[in-house]
Image (cartoon, rainbow, N blue to C red):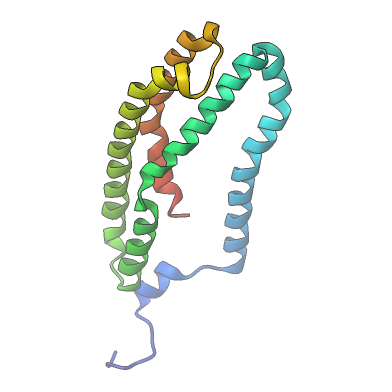
Length: 165
């Protein structure tokens, strides 16, 4: 190939070739993956409220909100992964993609440990003062927040892989 040629290198072309049917299938899977948890929540929420009681369900709901806030520990890593994967792919260096993805997964896990430590340390303050949890549930809520903190590093890693979709 000569300089200025409009032909694409074969390895580069394979990395980015996507058919319309594959794109539609992946879009459907993405939509289903986001819709399914919502539908499960809509169906199971009344049973949870009935089984736990409104106050305990409120504590559970606040835990979901607090865990959602820990998505800030992404710190732009997911966007950076997309950027670097596209850059190496466009240069025909697709062999470098796994190292980028795994470096991101390790960084997400490390940031998840930081988030877990923060939540575990703040659990008594959150349960006792900030969230105005009923006094009889403060001790259980503190334990629950600390248990949730253990999951933050595990939840952060799939986020790094989700960015590739």
